[in-house]
Length: 295
Figure 1 (cartoon, one colour):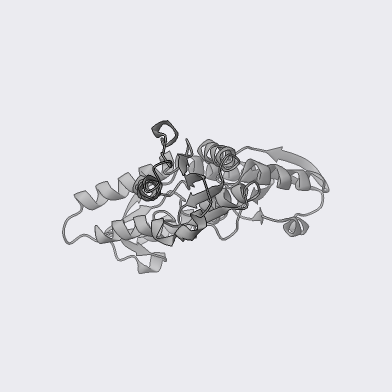
Figure 2 (cartoon, one colour; figure 1 turned 135 degrees about the vertical axis):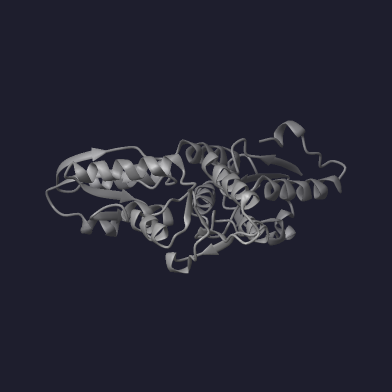
């Protein structure tokens, strides 16, 4: 059995920055200082558990904050949330991804220019909610049925959730362009790192007998990787970590592909690959070429 890891997978720069910022904040905090994050730092239960064990408290609402230091995760937060946190006397440490901040700024500028802002993305995703929270009125579009909410004859400004796939973005953009509008302004706010991971995952899944996508089950970008791979390899499985694997799935498979979402720690990927290699070593003919098992 040959194990191949996608050449682009795991933590993206924005997530890596959020994690390192959280670690530094915990390291520098006094024994009595409360350190919390507004929502999970990333959508990966294993990593969130690790940070909680180090002293980080996850709160879901600003009302749950009682002073101390508050980490704003990579997904960002709405302006009114920043104001409420300051009003509660807490110190804000902003780890919002620079690309998410760019999206927020572009969306505000489009609205300031008198355009109706359309966000292609998932309305319940924290990144999208943070963008919407900074606007007077935005419309979030995820599926064809949402198009009915776009007013006729409007001047439209189109942006996208950073982790949407180029295929989804272009499909929804084409659908919007087929409607009745006066002007259409489109800004590409897709994350290049997400695109590289998507392209690498799809390329790999076409070469292997079975494909594993590692990451939080509630991680939007990981779920999207799995969905894209499933289109080309029906033997694609989204797992959180090694303990989720039913090794019976490997029966009769000679090649295994592994990728991971942008919020999946290296140690989760390494552990998964290490166990797969251990299974391969049980068969003298199942060697794993080192050159194909690197990231």
